[in-house]
Image (cartoon, rainbow, N blue to C red; front, side, top):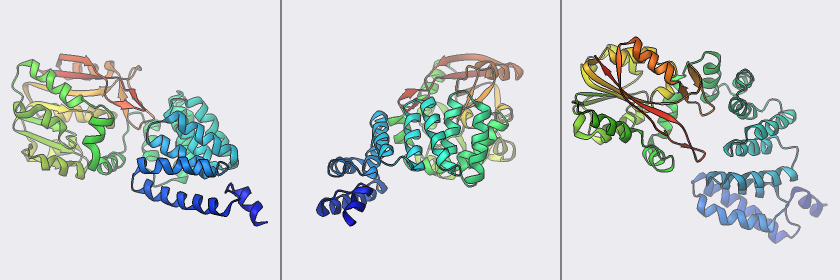
Length: 376
């Protein structure tokens, strides 16, 4: 009976190999917790070799493959795990997530729905299904999935953000954004500029320098760790900064570039904090509006502090629609018509505009645009 139980569980019948498989599973879990992916990979290969019928071995291989960006390998590994354990709702979740990374939203939605048949109360399945539906353009279905997920995952900030943004277009969840960047602060610069090929601050700085206008004093909205302040260099001094995430502000403070720094909602800080009274020759908002959604209020608060002849530089992810859209990434995209309509309403002249990829996502470029507006 003991031998058949081992075989049924997927462990090798050989006791020594079964013991080694158990050791590998534990060691791999420890390495993954320490983010030592490269060290865990050869262990996973050994595990699949000695225990080919062990679902968790293929699951481990899939998880490692996803961490290294090898989505196709991850999909194959999760499919093998699921074939060995077809009643696992969590393996349906893993496979669905891998299919989403590979850009196969329709296949992901089908797998996630199968998982929900097994466990209709798995909020993570509903969370991923909402993303797949949004990628497929099924906005009402996505809203329904995120609302169902929120009942099961009431503390999930992303789910709350998506449910709110889909119900009220342009509505951002400030708690979600602040938490996102606080958890990101420690490796923000390296990950964003390295793995994601983020070059927006430097591209905006180059556009501004070509204007030939004075760039200081300046205000950096959503300053983050200070990438825009560093890109602008001495041309935009003194420079002040505002960000919603306290840990990001602390990273910016460590650069020693900023005259004044504040944590909080940028529109509120601009309207209430005497240190940010302006007037400013330049306002820059690099990758800020994508986390704000409806930008009318912030737009107005910034312009109230901009001097006559001052420049307002910012980036957007571009939407092909006419207004604002929330994406599965949790970020907002804005249409050129929406942005340029706001500029006209405030009497701003278009000084410069350029199409510019914002970053990579799942190794694919995200289309965007850079703007420099001038206040008359």
